[in-house]
Length: 152
Image (cartoon, rainbow, N blue to C red):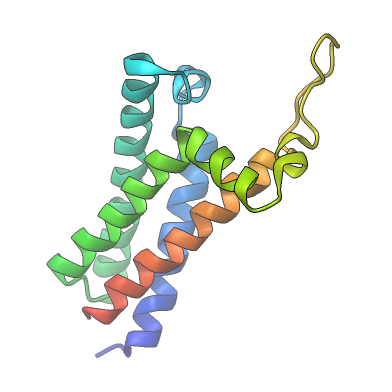
């Protein structure tokens, strides 16, 4: 039987890889462009992205279960995936992350690397907003893996 620490490490690795695949390969351009829009168009795009994101993470966890008998307690797995999915949706709507950044003194950091208004600057992945987005996702992947391991 794997220790809870081993389950945590394996689950975190699977969730992290699932996150990277889903955010950078599986997410469509349309989802990426629309998921932060106000109203239903943004909510729908974000929901589709998070559905494929959560499914990808689940597939990788099941692959670990089949390959190395990683314990996947149903309640812990469902709870971990739910925490990851719900928080991913909130973070990707962008306004909650910007709201938090502004209240923690990171307003300028959010705009770092973003195109300047009225200029033809090229946006990059190296923006402050992207760094905050990814670090928030990693925090909740950690929490999701903890939940899964605690139930193993």
